[in-house]
Amino acid sequence: MSLEVLSCGPMLSVQDQGRLGHKRFGVPAAGAMDRPAMDFANALCANAPGAATLEFTGFGGSFRAGRDLRLAVTGGACDVRFGDRVMPAGQSHAVKAGEVVKIGALEGATWGYVAVSGGIAVPEMLGGRATHLRFAIGGLEGRALAAGDVLPLGEDDPGQPCLRPRVPVYRPGAIAPGTPVRVVPGPQDDYFDPEVLDRLTSGIFEVTRQRDRMAMVLDGPDLPAAGGHDIVSDGIVPGAIQAPASGRAVVLMADAQTTGGYPKIATVLSCDLPRLAQMPTGTELRFEIVGRDAAEEIVLEERARVAEVLGGLVPDVAGALSSEFLLACDLVGGIVAPEEVMGHDLAEDHQ
Image (cartoon, rainbow, N blue to C red; front, side, top):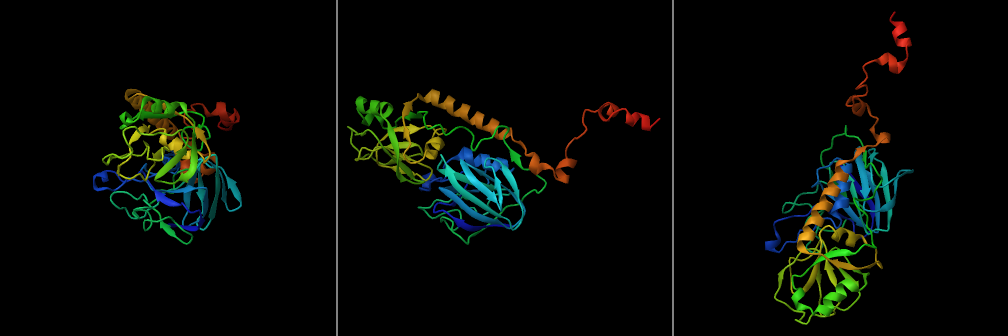
């Protein structure tokens, strides 16, 4: 009932939807950098939405299954091998006990997700299993995973089929680096002159190597704050774009602190933040300001679209033809005249 880590990159960690309700105590939510991609991986394995998965950046690594299970890799295109078999990402596959799964480098994306049927069953901490690396809480001992780690797995229904989307995808929605990242102004947009606010939407920004689960630093137009770069610390959320004294935009991500003392010129919409997180280093992007009412509609529409993708998964024929699955199917439903299907020989045999 376990999954053994044989090798991995430096940023492999256990993540879920995050621990909520503790920010007033200074505890960040953490959770997946690309939640739709993680939710997609869980859905492919017929897991509950809150099940814990593995999140990786760069390349995944190799893992040994301690039991028969189903496994899915999402987030971006990458080489996935079960033993000598090359398997596509973006759908679930059956893995036999003792089999080794190798997950290669991501292409055109930054964060990948590995879900297994039953979920990663590390102990909950403050209502969640997500790893916050700076706080060293959650996951496995609050740290990034390493070769030799053995992860407990939750209960699984072995009769469930492997699943795939109707149309092959690696995550719900395109990463679409050429599409502007939408933001709402503020909450301290009044600290900036109108000309600086114009720079936010007219300028081109670039994703730098200064990035991790806490924040992403962007190169681009300077964003000086006429009202000063130090404010009384106030509440902060992932997606907030801080403007420190350097003038460089800093976008806070999943592991963002709960309060901050730099003015925030704008906040990225929650549905666009995963897309921004997935942009590879060196990607150029623009920002687009939308009103608050429009932002709410955009977020609701995106959630509905993701839900439609997750609700439209179908059994993968190659992995579904078990006796349990076939017995659960209505294989002859709607046939009222079997001799018309099988030929008139059937009727002649009974004469």
